Image 1 (tube, rainbow, N blue to C red):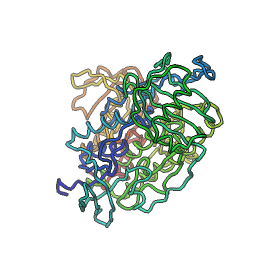
Image 2: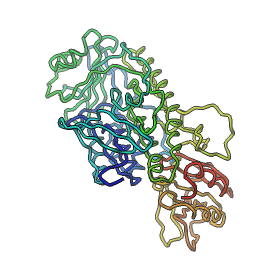
Image 3: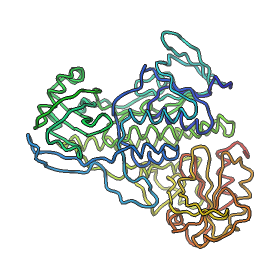
Image 4: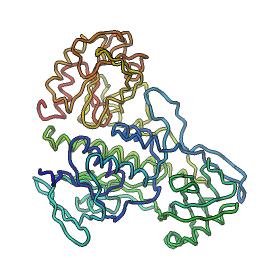
Length: 545
């Protein structure tokens, strides 16, 4: 396609749309990304970023999310009508740090700031979001997509090859694709949330505060300096008030906050407000022809557990590398069917889990519910996918797409673990690397564990048939190999200085095993050697690339 006609149109520039764009751009695929809003969205919205998503941003080379995000503060509840603390529950499960999980602390970052960060990264690829541009309709053919766009009252016909709907629960892409969006609207879960600047005497900004009773009237205040040094994200539950009316009245919002805060309050200003009702819905499938949906366009659910934004960007990351290979002509279109096949079971389980947390929270007066390490999203897997290959796994296990991380078991379809302190050998350099520094969204990484380089040579020879732009390799030798000289090294030879990689990948001494890491940081294959590697890639690539 000519450069003025990018082959992918992304509709909606929230986090899911921006991650889809960034993943494709890393793969050398130009995109056009539009948003019907005239200006970038404001508001904290869903600020929680779980460890699996922090890993995703690491692979996309967006360190600012982890660097600027803040740890989740301890919650503090109070005796009725006082500032006397009642309980101080943790909002996140405690997980001990391990070498396999470099980002073990969930972070909070408002979507307004997250969007700014991601847009800046798009600009590095000379891509910017076209605001005030609305998708009116589109039609598909075998060759591509013809979209009708509207901007400033002017209609434009735009020809492209693929369309990704990241346009939210009310978006047009899902409707045009004819996908269902079944589920329920929970009238028992309604609240007003927003961002406010206020000063409350004695209100410690180290804590996330909850006042009142969420079955009657309740208030949550989470400090965030992103709004200002007196900034808070608030949530009001007031079943006795018409919430639409409340959301439209700054005066009423301040009145309710003042009535629930047992201290002197000085209001600065309300920055952003939204009414929220719990909708729990998902599509019957994530694509139709040349059109796809990601994020809230595909699934919406309770905010309890904070999985929504995270699931949306993980949708986009899964789709992005596959669409790039198909668009480059390196993979068959059937690869795109695995986007639906891998993500739909995850989304379905995620809806069940967040609804369970919601129901538990609704039974508790202060809306607290037990938080499981499952929320870290490190156990999400696609072991059941028809494109993963495991020559060591026992077949017939039940599908558990939303599992808890189990470091004693590792199968194809699982998240690939990290390992620090890997020494690069053989090039006269002694750089220290992590395994995560090898994994990127534009290529597979073939990780060969072998007792010596000679054991890896047959596999290295077979890999020469593949294009280095989409397949990289690294040999992982035991720590004893730190002083080895390598005559003509492959992409990388690493000595596992402290045994972290051998431990994380459950390797035994003297064993040779090959792990193929996909561009999304998932283990695509665990195989014995050359034949397994070829078999895996035959399910991804069109012939030898």
